[in-house]
Image 1 (tube, rainbow, N blue to C red):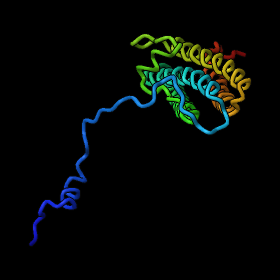
Image 2 (cartoon, rainbow, N blue to C red; image 1 turned 180 degrees about the horizontal axis):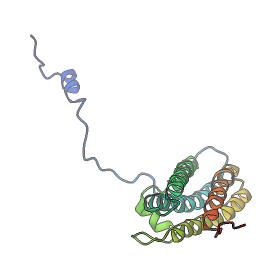
Image 3 (cartoon, one colour; image 1 turned 180 degrees about the vertical axis):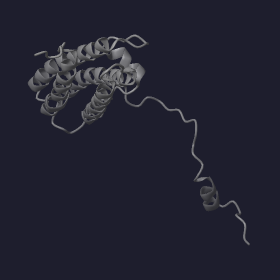
Image 4 (tube, one colour; image 1 turned 60 degrees about the vertical axis):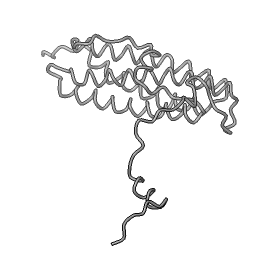
Length: 198
């Protein structure tokens, strides 16, 4: 039976399955900059849009994390209902994270992706490391939503002024509408409704 003589073809075939591990490279696109893309928006518009979108993105990543934490730590008589609700909301927030990040990328920017970086940018207050009472956890989620909704409303108006209808549409149709609906679902769990007595 013939053996491999070490020809270029034989060497390539033998090494082709070996992953090239421990590679390091240089940063090729700095955060806070945009590359030129032929999408009909100026450099300054795209730079501004990426800055505003990354702020919302970082806050949304923190809100997603809060939802997951509170989903795990839920307790009490409404445990099952709130456990499922918070997990559903977390999934919707995670979808927003992806949509926001992809919008930043489509504008030629770099989306904030590292949770440590997002923590540096976010304006969502850090919760205690331990568990809180259920109403406090729900209130914390509502306060985070309000931070995002206020930022989103302002960003949507400004981006329309800059002519960035795509970012405006994402913010209004996805971020704001999802946030408002989630706030509605959460806030009703904080209403003190006594039993009806006839």
